[in-house]
Length: 275
Image 1 (cartoon, rainbow, N blue to C red):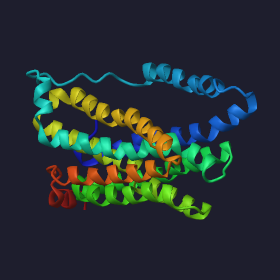
Image 2: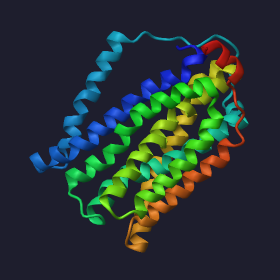
Image 3: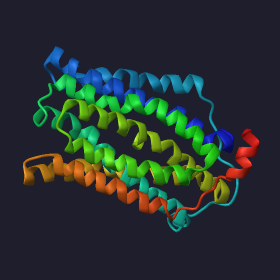
Image 4: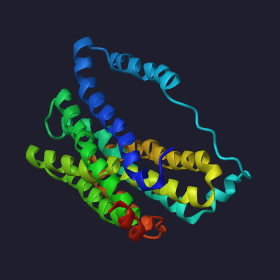
């Protein structure tokens, strides 16, 4: 629904909703539990705004019909080198993210001595820091291209995930989480989504929904794998530190995948147009 030259910024604006919701959810879940002393209450309370959004969508949003054309078989998307490499990269990026988000509060509580409420707030720092960073970097990707920024962000995100498990002082921990918010999954996501949109628009626009669904599947697959492997490593080693180290290594692997993805933004043309 948006022109290609503002796709990165537009996706970042949409994605900031996830960052804001993640921050509010993580920050409020602990206090809600402490108030009711019932683990079910955070789910019940936070379900209310989720249900209300269905009514907002029905009233506010207009339906967008897909472009007409020859149907693209699913196999064609699976054979698209660029799309599959981005899918692999988003899995790697989100592996580190889900390690931090799902096991972070437990790690901070059991191995860093923080209370339940404070542990949730510490994890929420990632989402808060990501909002301005995503908007800035999403806009920059429209101007300078997706690939160059991806090759910078993913190694930095990997280092931050590693540092989250490595540092021991609270000051260093806050710094690591802020840095991860600035360069991590929530900041790279708008670039990845826009990158997929660029390639699909250029080659098979009538399969946009299917391609984005596969992209989302690849990312969410890590939400199953990362928590399970992290818990397994904790059972073996007695600590969650190894889980964060592995998470950082897998995020770094994502850099290798994006290195072989073709760029789609004509940087020179964009510069001239935006100037």
